[in-house]
Amino acid sequence: MEERMMSKNVIIISTSLRKNSNSEALATAFAAGAREAGHVVEQITLRDKTINFCKGCLACQKTMQCVINDDANAITDKIGQADVVVLATPVYYYGMCGQLKTLLDRANPLFPSDYRFREVYLLATASEDEADTVAGTRVGVQGWVDCFDKAELKETLFCGGVTDTGDIAGNAALEKARQAGKNI
Image 1: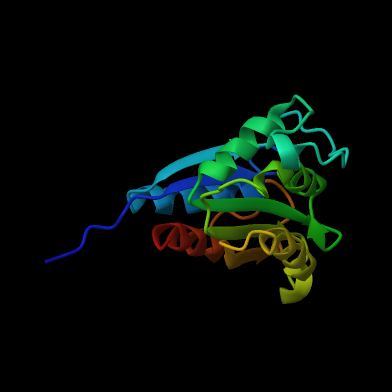
Image 2: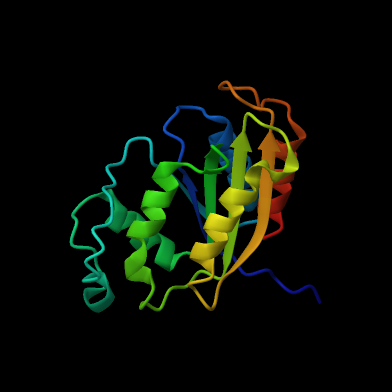
């Protein structure tokens, strides 16, 4: 008797501010695979969001809500309710983009919460195509994941050599992202 797979709640956050960016294309491919596998997927782009810098006041550790009233609060709530978190970023100067770093800082209310996510995936693109181009980005995301005892960074998918919008079209990384989404 075949066991039915449990549907997971997947949140995919595209952090590039460029419309139709290469990292967003990876996110869309991952989402397609996850939907094919029967998971519930929500894609969020930071392109049209207002996310201010963390003030470091730590009030969120008691209230489990940030004192800054902007789009980061709703996104943080969605991260906390997801089973799988997928972060898509362009790599700038061998690190994650500033928008992703700011969002991760603002997700501080999740630390004392009963968050659901157990799996985190990193999708990254860059102009440079050396394998170690994504190392700094992976270290930064791993540092965030390490703060959540029940979660792990399951996989990093990197596509280098893509600069301009659409450069990723036809790249094998898109199929790898789709397969990763199917296999969560």
